[in-house]
Length: 220
View 1 (cartoon, one colour):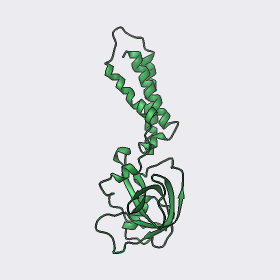
View 2 (tube, rainbow, N blue to C red; view 1 turned 120 degrees about the vertical axis):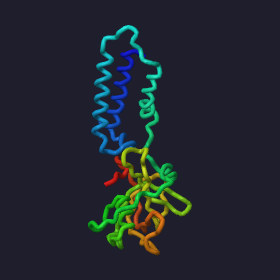
View 3 (cartoon, rainbow, N blue to C red; view 1 turned 90 degrees about the vertical axis):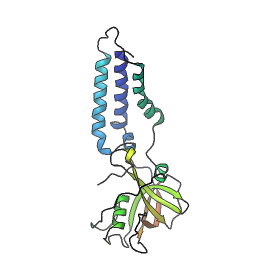
View 4 (cartoon, one colour; view 1 turned 90 degrees about the horizontal axis):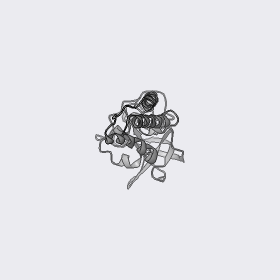
């Protein structure tokens, strides 16, 4: 690989990064939305460096190892495969419980994230009792029913953690379909459980929706 080929490869890498961050929301399938400015900046820098290298006068004998072509692997992975956001497959393989939720003592419930709902269910506040709430996530079915699920990320998809709420009183929608569930919290029968278990919602309405532009929840 000569200097010009290296330059054009950097241009392709930078342009691909820009295409998934500056001109689309695909980047949100892999990292937190707050990383967008850094991704756009990095893509622009790679394009600039690549163009500078590509148009630099070539010197005889300047070659890089052939293994340098492996830099193109991420491009082909994104362009040809374009992995979707994590879904039921990843949620089922979670082996650890979410971190302990913080008790919530804020205003009455309405539209909540799954993290907020779980925090209230495990807290000492009664803000959930008898109040209708709306939750959004994707369906994960099991032999005992189904869960409304959403993945939470701290940095990127590699550290994703599944947040789950058991849905009662409504048939399971298709696996991985995104839905908005309206209902009320089902209080713990014997007080807070000693071991973690997903809280439950008694559904009064389940509506299919389009996947959101930001598929993951982020810590508040």
